[in-house]
Amino acid sequence: MDTLMLGRWQFGITTVYHFLFVPLTIGLAFLVALMQTIYYRTENEVYDQMTRFFGRLFVILFTLGVVTGIVQEFQFGMNWSEYSRFVGDIFGIPLAIEALAAFFLESTFLGLWLFGRDRLPRWLHIISIWCVSIGTLISAYWILVANAWMQVPVGYHLVNGRAELTDFVAVFLNERVLAQYQHVVTGALITGGFFVLGISAWHLMTGMNTALFSRAARIALIVTGVSAIAAATTGHSQAQYTARTQPMKLAAMEGLWNSEQPASFSLFAIQDEANRSGSRELNLPYLLSVLGYNNLTAKVEGMKDLQAQYEQTYGAGVYIPPVTLVYWSFRIMVGLGMLFILVSLIGFILWWRGTLDFVRWFHRVLMVMMFLPLAANTAGWLVTEIGRQPWVVFGLLKTANGVSTSVDSISVWISMLVFTLLYGVLAVVGGILIYRFARPKPDGQLLPGEENAHAY
Image (cartoon, rainbow, N blue to C red; front, side, top):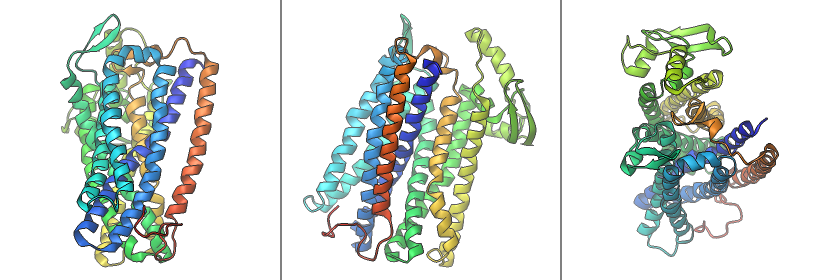
């Protein structure tokens, strides 16, 4: 593989790995803050134990997220220096603000929360964990500001082959961010919610600490159920924005080679990218027109027509992304989203019947479900990033022109192998720590090796 392909593989591997922790920590931070607030209001020691238990898991995941995220910025200078030169004046600002404001906010207040339990007033201790949660949300927003500019560039002008900032407010309030942020946050709450549900189901199956994990499951079920429905509505809004600004991405998501009016939603199709066609299709009439434009008879342009338009606008080249990967990633994301709603609904029914704590088959389902939001988040990221190809900055800079020209393929191979090995070690260490602190234990022994019941 050449430097371009290796650089893309390396960035993809490290980003997918890092993105496993981002939504999980956002969702879990919110749930831990909610648990501690309930304890503060009720004085029920069960919620205190719950906060400490899931707070310990949050700290482990947060640490892994920080370590894996650092590598992301290295690559901009290592493998993508031409991209960095082009967008540095714009891209560097949200990254710097994210690091200086949001990340420091998270880290500072996490330290206060961890070590200030018996030293800070209770109200200030609760504010600390809420500041951690708010910090994760602010951090996510600034990262999405940077990503949104790659998707829909605004507030800039070109000077000597570089994009320079002209309107910070336009970048900060990019309509793409506003459409994407809601969907990312609801996805994060689903991820954190199913994590708590899965751990709680594991304990309920063994009959240990049932008073704690029965309540934890109900808190997580409410957050997950509401967020799952919200994710569907925010996803619909994002699809409509994509139809207006990146119609090629929408067409690839649907495997739509030829324009249709009205357009059908594809449930299943075999994509033949070489011949630019699909086969063995199963469609739902009119639904794509509704998805894209809230109109039963709206026209949705196909990839062939868009390819011709892009050639006239940008010159000769292939502007169709890897359709098969985008098409199936979108279906994985949507399919899992529907599954999240269904499982949440079953959970509410069992709760209403008073059997949520005793239905073992549902507990086993929840133990599997805790991993599926990670797959849905990854699939969504693949749709967003690969669906934009061949552009690294849509309409301005192609991915092939963003790679470093002075780095050879051997160097990229070495760094990719080192990063992959490092991430593998971190995965093993993280897995062992999560298992050690999350596994069922006898009542009163929730945190192994903890002699002081009030210590984190």
